[in-house]
Length: 535
Image 1 (cartoon, rainbow, N blue to C red):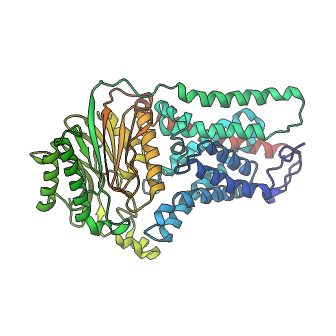
Image 2 (cartoon, rainbow, N blue to C red; image 1 turned 30 degrees about the vertical axis):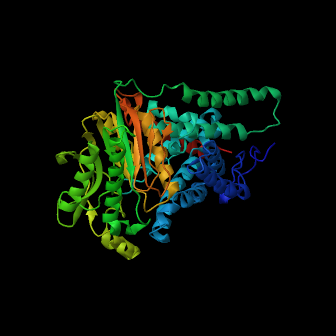
């Protein structure tokens, strides 16, 4: 018999020996397996992009936690979480120091600790009905991400399995059930790998038929993605859109101190584009998109800033979607907004989107007095950004835009609300000046998933990069470099109608998470019965 399948009294983790119980993976193998699981998951994400390693990481973590006691399963999950999130979120410490990065990484690792404990808890079900092992793995991952995406302070969905699949055949599944369905498919593939590996390979030849069945199931899963139609039937209209990436004088938190220079960079780049249009070297765009924080000087209250934006809009002859910081509505409050600025008339106050999900401890500080005891760095956030209340549906004339700002692209409901509100084109305004190219590429992967999910062409406009256009089937066009000044112009086809994912919304996630809860309850019943069985 193999090490994994020996029927031996269980002595690992201090568990009480049980006649006929099977051993978990030895700790000498389980601990490195958990660490390698986290590293494999890390490698699946941009900038590495080795998406096949995501199911491998899932399988290794599930193997390490299988048949453990809850405490040991949680510990192994935590190890995997640290190995994943510490390097994945390394960009958070570039300009704020190690403490916020460490706290965020440990918090996110805690959710994988819960996943490890849940995996250990459902082991009796997987042992009794081996065919359930793969779907159990899938629903537990979806349940873990559903919790992590919402808690605490509105959650932090970075590092979802779905966001590692931007170049995978599984990406198109987003059109059927959004990011939760893609996560389920990745974890299901990992469960299939684990079920194939966790067996006695010396069994008679007749026992190979289940192996062939599992292998066929994995192949069908990979084939299912490309079979999903990409996008929805559009109205046929196209618009010409220009992304202006003005860049900043210096990367880092002091980009706010350079705010006049940042605004000038975007104005000057737009004026140069207007010169090319006037010379006949470039088609006039129907819309120009500036990134988040392109005007950190409130152009509604600062006449000089407003004049400069009007100068650019009048020269290009097209509306500009400006990423602006607006003062108010109350004293000491500010808003992170997308503001439409029209040629000839200036700011269109009826077409303003205020970011609905400000980032805690970056754009506002919850429990400030408590947070200050942990780190005085929280006082860098002098004014709290207040959230908007309406989805980012903006009428730009040539197209109805679905605007989301920066990290909001990671939240399912915020993006979906723009499409159900009538958006024909998805726009992500972001500022990556305080991060690095890895963070920017991870964010672009999310934009790719959203384009497929909702059947809409999309774009990401960044101050420093990476900016780019995305087709409804997830292909990237015109991607810019990082820490460069660039202007990219493309024609984009407007979308209409709804994908199945847009129609069903959060219900696939609700259903899969509910199955996860039912599995945990079922495992409790199975454990009680096992403990009550004599001998």
